Image (cartoon, rainbow, N blue to C red; front, side, top):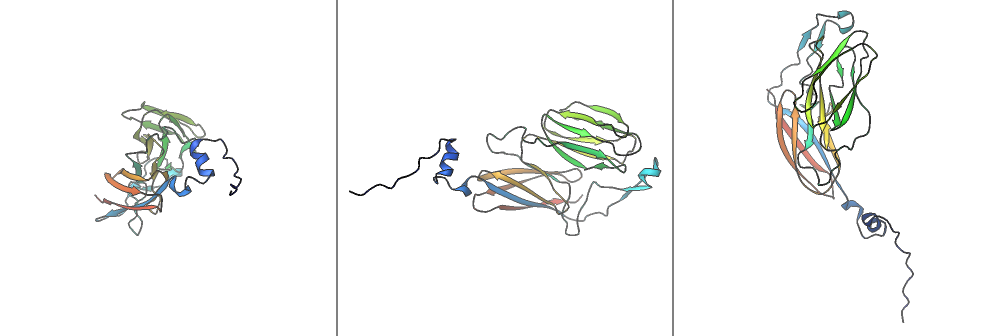
Length: 237
């Protein structure tokens, strides 16, 4: 009679974690990755300048028009990418880090922030002058608040949408608050790139939005074997 080798009992944990620790579930099957880049096609106009006619002692005499920032390799900065068909059961408010939008050098920094629906953006003013923050969203509460240096103004955004922020005192100042419905939202950097992790394998529809170039759709198939790669073209206008 052949003896049966002794086996250590599997720990009593959550079912999927128990399977993973006991060797019945492969680690690479848990999630996939999507890596992408947004580029511009067509003729890209040169970046213009806006004359400054107020508070020149701090704001300078002109400001760049930052509504279309494209690298020498045609990579698009400040495009917002999100998954239109998120995985079932995606959490509604996954982000817990503080979201800040500053006014510095008479410019909003950064130009675009992402906040989960129900989350709060803390508006700052690091300039030695008076600014204001003004927004008229469609799904969230409108506001128009004056803001002296050093004052923090928290604003909560309840519903998903993209909200434009202006400073009425300095007409060239624009920023955007992207109110996210789920975790899979991203803003492209100077290299035009974005990335999503922890995606279950499957097919996904995406939307890519840019303040000047509009919105274009895209799709990608994610597997658990290697990162999916996606390049999206947006046509210059």
